[in-house]
Image (spheres, rainbow, N blue to C red):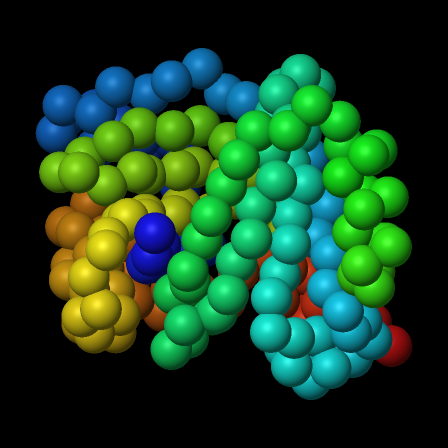
Length: 183
């Protein structure tokens, strides 16, 4: 499955959620997501971006464990994605380490989900980064990711998200960028 998404820094969570509710969106209860990302190469941002695959083990609400394979498409927010539920984070992690993958980072967030027009919308409070809104569309199409992302962002503009708040990278890249600025 192909996942195409857009993301923006969220300045006013309450106002945005109010606007989404006015459009008929119903929010699920917030969930915690504790992600561990694994890659073959770790280090600088350039080295990290040079990986072919990004593997993730996600613990949802401390209970459910998911394993995800992602391969980047035309940009950071376009990827081929496959996800399955697994029984053991520890066993999966051992297998990944034996296959030559290394733990690249950890991402912790609280996510609130709703749906609109066949897309998932997430309000994410990401530890160390802040609050974001994300909209993702799953497709089997090989159409233009940039075109789909621009169409999705038109929806963001309709709910008051400013183009200058648009973010073109995933949380993993944002964390690496933030950490590289500290050095």
